[in-house]
Image 1 (spheres, rainbow, N blue to C red):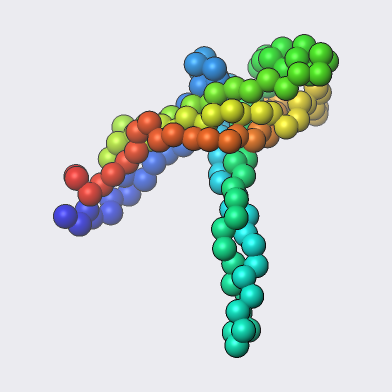
Image 2 (image 1 turned 45 degrees about the horizontal axis):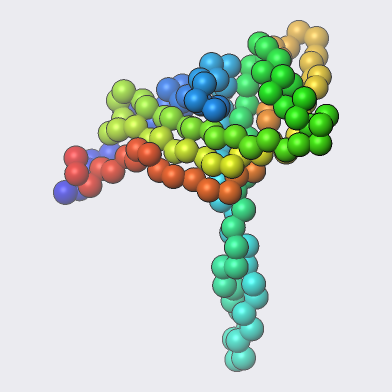
Length: 148
């Protein structure tokens, strides 16, 4: 069945939520997670085009948060000072009530790749962005319109 596109079905990020180690991060305003593909060149005689074969993947992402607490400093400082690299589980949930469904993705073995200790400016709401890497993911809920 072909579903007609309706403007109200576009998913609004306002309904997004981030969970870090099972705890909701209410101050989160954005989350991005993506897989970067790595390639090896495959030479082909008689063809001037570059050909490539996938040889690996890297998971990268970031969480943007309104600065209302010291969550990330408290979460990471002690471990980093001891020379340990903690890993975390992050869940992204996007559930706009007008959409065809909800999408939940769990990101596994997340490691934050930097820690902002201070970043502020006069007459500006504080915000931090915490980049991270991850090595695995699972789709918990997906939006599939083929059954609508």
